[in-house]
Length: 547
Image (cartoon, rainbow, N blue to C red; front, side, top):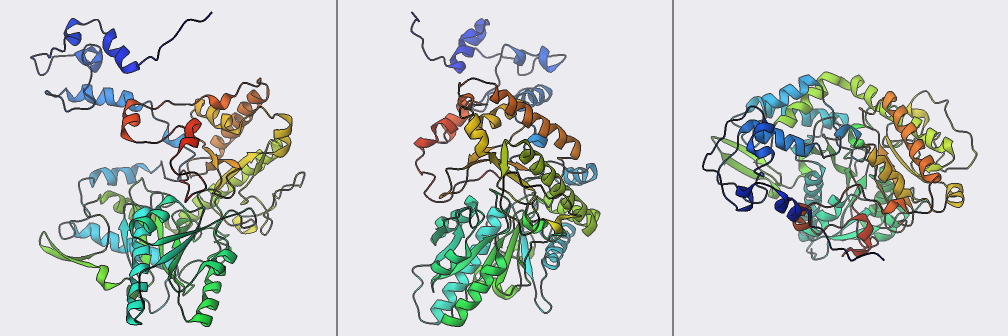
């Protein structure tokens, strides 16, 4: 008969297990700094714990703090193997050096750092031309801390233009709404909630390629629609939403009603992919379409800069309401500002300009074509096993969007133009045959066991309305080379074979990490095994995708 067992508190266990009387008595050393040869010969190696939740009375030696924090950070995942994230984890040494040399520069101090601000203006101009700003238009834009801020700024501009037009016509402005697909990243719904706009979140389906459905857009627009968020690159599956088709629907609606509804393109990832690849977007998506008034992108995703920079561009300064601009008289200069943040790092802007000038068009093109080629290779390899099928379709011949069992894979394409356009994302799920043959194997176990090999590959449901289907997703960034891809395919196959040979024990119950004390007290997030206890069910609102 098993005996009773009690919960073990690891923090209390460590606290009571020390064999130093001074520690148990809570005594402090009177000496502020004790001599030591290495960090591990200091008292902080065993006798004195670094303070966690209150500032310590006395400091600790720099080399000791550096080494102990470095050791703790070794518990993090390896950024290069974080295949869940769109955010870049590699920059060249020269770019890193430029960033280090300019870490202390603040973007808000425009008068003090004129050279940096000139580089900022050049980046805005380069992006405007890259996105086909039309002759005679005066594009205007700004760096942001990321695409979330940029999306909020784009949404605010649309709301204010709608209000001004309605007020000029003597109409009320009480019920603004904005349209997006259920596959939208959470930043889009945040805009609606924070700035009091009704979010009309339209369901997605397999028929709409898990993206915004133009037919549903047609049924949900009205005179109170301030705009449409259209995503160039869904974070779930990598599909580009049909900007041109939605633009045509809005053109027809304006002819019938006189109501002009603008489009803001959320090109967080696609804004640095579609312009460079041979496939483009498969349709018009940028300022070539008059309906598109603003576009955002993340420089820290496929702009190839470390985290901390996004961009928003309006096709013409007339689309940025003057009422939203602030004239700043600060530290000796006068500047116009339209951002949600003030002080922010300038090093990322310098790094962005470095990439644009160093790589040029052909450099970016080579990188993006390489990522797509490697994503196609991974897709074919996964489907070739018979164990998986891909929800994403960038590896299929242009126009062929459906998986068909036994169908020969298309490999004759010369470049991305011969395939479906999209992000270098591989979204896949276990095949129907695999489910029949190995019903005890949970797909989440593949993710968990790959985590043991240091890969971070998330497993999560598709957007609301399709949440019964779970996908594994790999973002193929530039650093996932052909050699690394070979290892990844081998490891996915090995892990899957291990699960196939396992018994009915649910390996998905094993979680790769347990919440720290800090996380338990810092937020109300839940582990995957407790997601059914969430305050907001999956079917309500936008599900946060890993990005």
